[in-house]
Image (tube, rainbow, N blue to C red; front, side, top):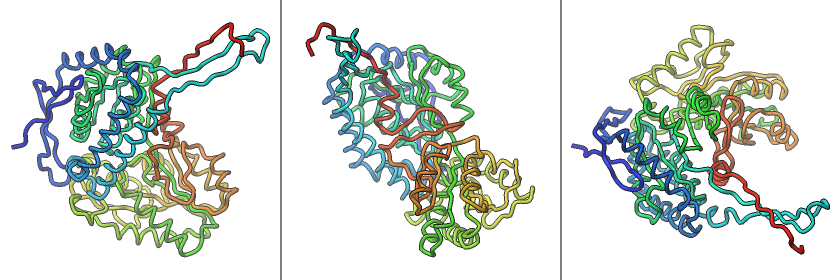
Length: 481
């Protein structure tokens, strides 16, 4: 029997009256049973976070940094255990799960470093005009209040880390709500935070049911919401609390653009390898997974041949096997949705070059060409192991195709021309342009986020710290400066 996992209420373990089971999407086995907080316990967590705000924000930087360092080191020590847990509850191949733990290690380390140097203040002399003689402005940042962090299932540890670590770094209390499908990784962070000296009430990890979230979102004591998930849910949250600060990391249908100058065999091999890998590496369940390949006509046929071969070479199967590249989607329903979108496109005239078959929650790595306008694969985020191919005649046409989307998260541009790289940076309507690689590259310290329906605000440790705080100016008068 699997024991019931407690949640973390204002820094201590607690259990509620109800629970739910977490099952592996690969084989359906029970991974864990998780206790659900009652309404009264949620209220206790919010009240504690609100009450401790002044104390926590005044905590010395070395205290917060030490706690973050501790979590980073403990994640290293427990890497294999946690990776196995991620793989079990998420279906993520173990090699990618180990990589996710490594990224979370870095997130907490970056946050510890930033906590030590954050908010030193910036002085500004005001005597640039006569009325400012003898005056000096000092600008520092202060927390907006407790943060409600809502994390998704696809990176169940690292995207929890991206909510929690910046909050602790600035001294903002946080209530973390992990995804219902993958709560166990978030609860592990609670175990590690409980080993630190952070003030009681400064953090909670609450596996609250989704239908209970509207009340929590609207609670005035939680002025900051950091959400990662679908555009539908994200914008519904924003519309329900327009006066709150919402950071929304939402969907995408990321494009990899292969231009005419990226034409040698080695170049095309590299592009095809990166495209095949990162259209499938989380079973396509990544906001910056390669969904669209837009290739110049001069290299298109050679690229397509290589991409299809490398997609077919992806090893699918048991996520606990270190050789596996592609595991199941998070649920059978998710796989059925992907299947239906591919079937719709093929029925409308698209060419299926490889894949297209489903077994339970698993869907074959799939390549589709010649998409008709208007089908879901052409306009929505598939969030599955499917990539589409499009031939263009010029850089102008390629960049127009990238921008012809309601999403704008990241784009990969395979070119060796520095002017084209800067043009891409200037013209592409996305939050990030990755030159010489797939759009799926993310370093956890860089700003990460999108435009259009891909969201608002930025993650990346220091950038999230800015989002959780606001500038307050102090003007000193009568100084001889």
